[in-house]
Length: 154
Image (cartoon, rainbow, N blue to C red; front, side):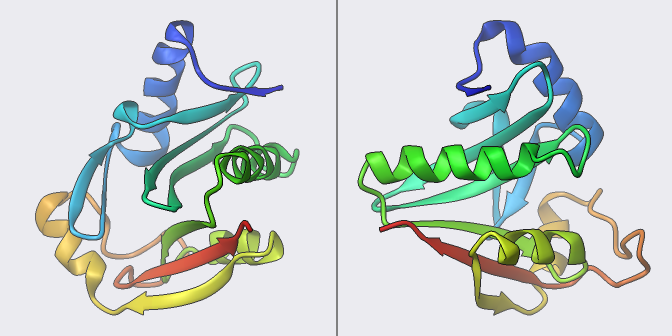
């Protein structure tokens, strides 16, 4: 079941974000965002979380985490969020990932997202705001660039 989180979810959300993102704050587009301050959807029981922000007629997916991959939780969150945004009349959902994140690139493209923009060197800039961002991914690819993918909603 996908729903908006309540106060009872805060502790596990903080734990999940700390485990997956190194804390509740992320850097994107040269800005720091506290994911706890953003609207979100969760999958019960404590199976997944998506955070997002709305800007004008578009929304940006800020984080997407399935506790266990391969069980459809990420897909359920994307579909629920897209449906909700369509009902609100928003035209696009976009997400930013990094050049090393091959799993994310595969996941989003299989769900209809299209690559729209590459910002070379953007992660190097983001490290100035969040020095804990690693330089090399677990797959040994240097983490350098931000990539934007968009899903047309309407």
